[in-house]
Length: 102
Image (cartoon, helix red, strand yellow):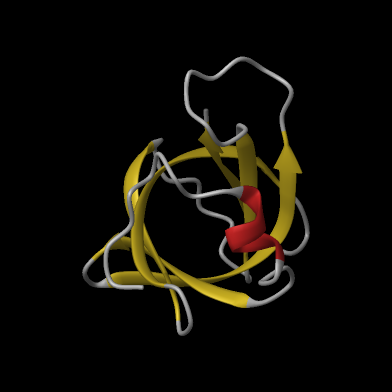
């Protein structure tokens, strides 16, 4: 897909890419390899037809937290998509970031 309507994207769009590599573009020259580690269906209210969900991306070896904000994530099959990422913690592998689709 080239362009996404964020109101129609579902958890199923991402579930098949679990544990696969994504690039996170924190800036055009700051591309950080990451892995999709979690897709969680949420039970909160949404006025949209699709249910709310969240994604968690784990950076590979990059422990520097970036500020929350809109960043591009890229995958060879999905293409590029801009999402609001929030740093949620660090571990031995790197930083974890969450995107919530509500």
